[in-house]
Image (cartoon, rainbow, N blue to C red; front, side, top):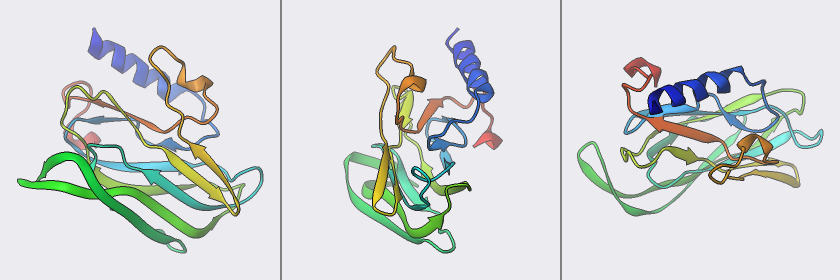
Length: 178
């Protein structure tokens, strides 16, 4: 039943019209997989061009490798994880906590994507990850950081954080889907 419910949610999500907030291109992935996170920025801030995008990395997401964007400066902020993880058979206790693209210009009437590759947690208790995003437009910024509480409709939030649903590879996703 749980698998069918998740599949139904996925189909519904694909039929909802594009929103005006920052979203993930692919909203589902397998536990423990490598995931190409593609953040879509559909517009600027009240008519102003986007000049920066910053993505917070949730605990358990490791081995983050951001994709450079021509015309933008790329920086990462690193720090200690809450616990030690394993990557390629080796313990990892610190890494990228935030990815920042800055000093670019994305006009309000255009969209673009900001990308990184990361390893997702292999913890079956984690069903959803949230990636708070700050979109900067000159001196103004918008924080896409609201997280729906259980039972709350995330579509009713003014500034929802992009979310990624996690599941097993056999729950509707094959190896090539990541």
